[in-house]
Length: 533
Ligand SMILES: Cc1ncc(C[n+]2csc(CCOP(=O)(O)OP(=O)(O)O)c2C)c(N)n1
Ligand SMILES: [Mg+2]
Image (cartoon, rainbow, N blue to C red; front, side, top):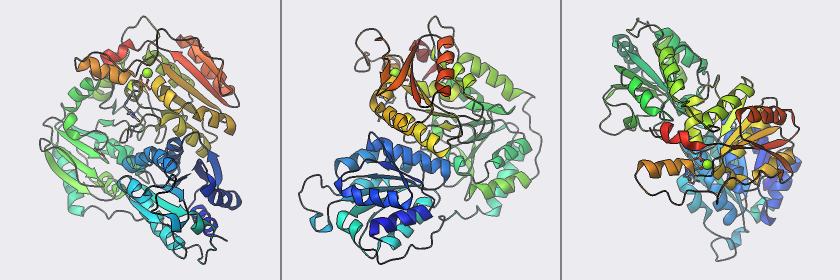
């Protein structure tokens, strides 16, 4: 057994099933070890996508995602997705393969300092050396899985890969949980909830890592508190719940802000301010935070109290505390949600994004997963889409990088082959990652990829208009939409210009044995009304 075999054995023991990446000569020992050791290698079109796919695998499975690349440009490409795991907080192992150790530090082809490259976007970076591979892996996996989870980087020189491993695979840990918040702090949260007349909960990205997400629902039911979620936390409680007001800080955010500011207490539950800072929306309403870390907010935010520690344990204690009726009139949340949802669907003469999103929601089965990308479409989808359970919306909003959607959908389909997965991306995002369509084809994944073809980097165009700047540098094509091609890389492509055509195309795509690109030629005019209102 060589060190590459040992590395694969340890990752396999840690529950890793897939490796995403692109090989080169110095990656081949690791690639062969993966083949022999039972980790499936998924050749991606770009290393950035490989890291996004690994990040999503980490999110969905709770086991570390695994991506690999060659040195220099392979490593720099990988960083975009590794950064996603860092800010979105998913366990991930990124391996860069390298020249033999005696060449490290020299000015030779493709060589750069990988540790300097990965240090700011990982929890830790490790050089792998003979005799210390198992110890480094054991520590690295513990770091990646410990709360809050994140990526670690390993650099593997080719001679180390090929050398005989003198070590045995070590026992692994599942990472370290946070200590509980002090009893008195949690007790005080309960007291403040009972004293409030119009309390409201906002669920954030860190709540996605609850071991028992049902505690969230138990909490809002017990205390009868209307609740909202951020984009990343969509579906942590079914958004059809009678106390749900939907997603905040996305399309029609002013309506949500108005409602949030009618509260007399906001309870943040796992609210990660990397996604959206409290000061964007909270105004002068006091905040009680129940979270895995201390609140990071501007000094304008009134922080009334914080309980910091393991989130499951805090919620378990909060659902056992006495509750007291509050002053929210009956059906407040439902009425607000109806108003919010109506405002998201302004009258339109063309094929509007909101119509396409409604069709997609109707066709995707209730248990299905939606992976989407970054742009104006993200804002509209986040506000409009009804998610019914945790993990049903795959999106990056801490890292917020274009190019996430298609690799995320591929990873979701690999992790959950029996669950229908739908991907929606903007045309700008599609242009960045369309090579991954060929990957979905090679893997034979049933995956409808709906491209919102509006001809613009719409989100940035909207920002130009709202900032009073000339619209410049945000148009994606010359002239009108070109005719839809019949395929991309052999993947059938269907052009649709109406809701009915989209519905038909989606049904066809879900019945296919491979991916289908659906180019939805939409009229993006409504974004100017609904996005950044
Ligand atoms: C890697 C990266 N580059 C640039 C941006 C800035 N950005 C955010 S949204 C967006 C436009 C996306 O365009 P498209 O995919 O067409 O979506 P639309 O806004 O039209 O819905 C850009 C350039 C980003 N978030 N990530
Ligand atoms: Mg666009």
